[in-house]
Image (tube, rainbow, N blue to C red; front, side, top):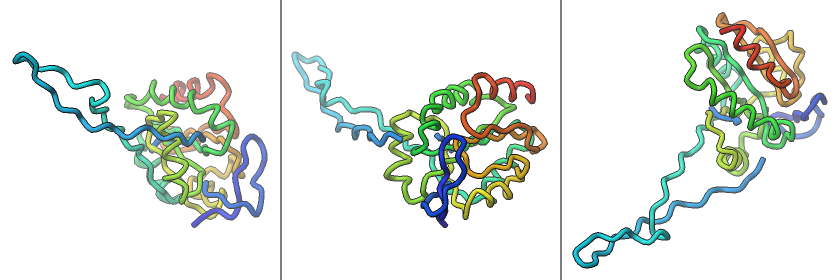
Length: 209
């Protein structure tokens, strides 16, 4: 089910009448696609010795497809609960949200720093339309080299997500980006509506780890 309202970047509230679907797998915008891998070339023999194939005929490493899936608010809650023994960072963003795109390199750096952590989980949730995954979301993730899985939310609106995640105290009405931190008991600990201040996310998760 697609949103009948659209999330707006920065501090604005949801604007009625526009079409939208509201993360973390990965982000996760530009729509440039990578080249298809070349067909491997065959080696030629010269004077009894093997000669490498021309560079143009060398096969490129196959590109790994981004991990993208559609989730409902209930399924998103299940993902958070699955990490009940960890601090969980849930990041909402969209490819059409300029502050989200600007913040993405910092989000990727944060993920890379903590990806092997045994005490922290990162969940990226895209607010893009669910039917734009192939045309918009995946190309964006490829161009930005987003390394984490991305979940595209399918919900009736932000109220359904707020209720589903149990974050009513945030008074979130769809501002993007949005970041929610849950402690190891699954309780909402901190949240930011808009870009996270420099160093604040790191400080928050360190205090909870």
